[in-house]
Length: 410
Ligand SMILES: [Zn+2]
Image (cartoon, rainbow, N blue to C red; front, side, top):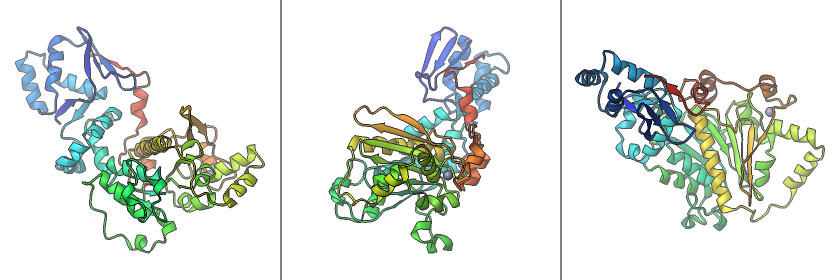
């Protein structure tokens, strides 16, 4: 181990004996009391020295016996320590790719804020490269979302959509003006590739099952499918029959899109655990008996040539959905699980709408989540996503940080 005090957190002394790591309440911690000699030693924990060398330095500075190990242990326990050489074989391979590391350095630093174990941050970043995600829908939301996921290090981002790029699909970060008239899915895949010129070579050859799978069964092998349809009804009142293959195959999926003047992110559906499109439809029908009649009229109405979609609203939706998708892929439990986040122009304040599992829905989520907070450990996630990046229960870290600050005695 080459201990490194997480450089992502700014350091400041609150007084002679108390050091604060970080500025914002979400991740700031204070450590104390720390004597002056030990405080000066913190600068040596920068990832360039292994423990034996650090112990020698400690002796040279007349630190008491065992003080260096105690300091390292306490910092690690507080989640303040990273390991410049940790993270496993995939992380080692990633460190060799200097261009990728340079491009994703801010993302790696950010991951270090939400991970506890030394080396865990780069382990997560490396795991993203082995993941496959599908984005269905390549309009103003879907194309940007695909580019964000790709840019953030997801190894394979497959985009599905039909038709050709229309002038109103053009979005900063998404489909460029030059792509108007091209096949929409091909143009969106190109936008995703551009966001990560160094991403791993697409996995080939595919398994025979995948090669023979019809398009609607393309969910096989994906850790997550993002449903970002250009059709606003498909976002607001998703058709349970269209999501049925995803539910039946246990494929996690996330809804995102713009509906009139409202941006929608969620729910993230973890089949059998959180509410799905069927739960949503049944729940709405319970509360409003005319809901199915309205949905039928919306669906049968003449398709609109151009739908309302505020450009900045679409960008917000794409970014929030990508953030929730990445959190899920990293092994966290994002707040969109079983919840739909909505934001409307012109106020633009996000609000959460819980979507409860419905007892009559065949997805079975009501049986596992009724009246209680759904809990999940890393093992369950690995089963569900097929290739969970981390087996560490993620929320232990959050529990330790509930108060925003944490005091350790060194
Ligand atoms: Zn359901």
